[in-house]
Length: 235
Image (tube, rainbow, N blue to C red):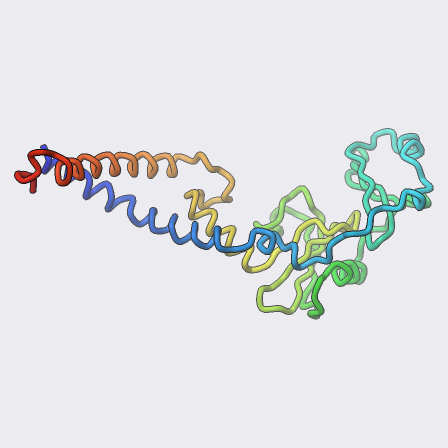
């Protein structure tokens, strides 16, 4: 019987051992990296200034009257200027000046660069800008809910990248190469090599089950080799 347990243990651990190694390597990377740095919080200047409600002359009541289909209304600011961002029915995302009620023009390339430089915490030059409108043209590191956005990349070894909403001018995402590596580490760690969002995928369940069986067979062998009164006869 012990020879059969030993055989099962050997092949089970041979099958899951490589994945366990991946889990260990990726786990070390994820726990040693500062999660605030990974999220790109050090790339952007902290928004300490609160919105001065005295500057908001266009009230939420007026907005509701002018845009009855408005939903998900948020009072935010762009480069220190207060504005409302909301979904206006089938028209989609809109932004209006919270001082005057004027509809904000779509952010062009020049404005996108200006906003990116305003938020950027360092002094690197902008390397490239690109407008992303469709899901087919969208990188995996960005959520479709932010489209359309300007992708602004800075000249730095970690390739810091800001995503600026074309409608509102808001900084909607911050990415860099350490974040991108972290994203792949996470996918390898949970064994979801598609988008890294399914933590209960079948492959993870299979490897976890086989790992548990390997641990049980290993515990049986350990008992007979170390703790059993008849361990002298165990090979």
